Length: 116
Image (tube, rainbow, N blue to C red; front, top):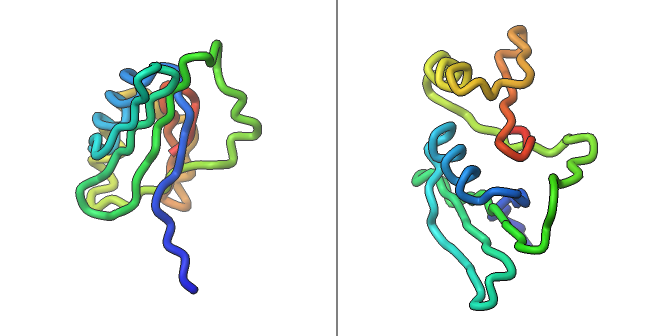
């Protein structure tokens, strides 16, 4: 038996704001949408056009306020061929929340406070 990871999920408060963020920050674009007729939720899968892995954004109509992110230990990890350009983009977006220069990594937060 072999398992294959297919997606990560973040619940979001403002779907359009989150879609714009992930497109601008990481070039992720919608590849699939699930929206029942009753409008109770919308699920959007985002892809990078390179890998088969997806980010699932879930918006729930009944949710009020922000999500409890606990200790915020979950995150998305991206590898990039031009670290400096990526860092410059995210610095301009003012979304870098933590940086470890020794390790050559940094974290950003999306509109709902999720880390990537």
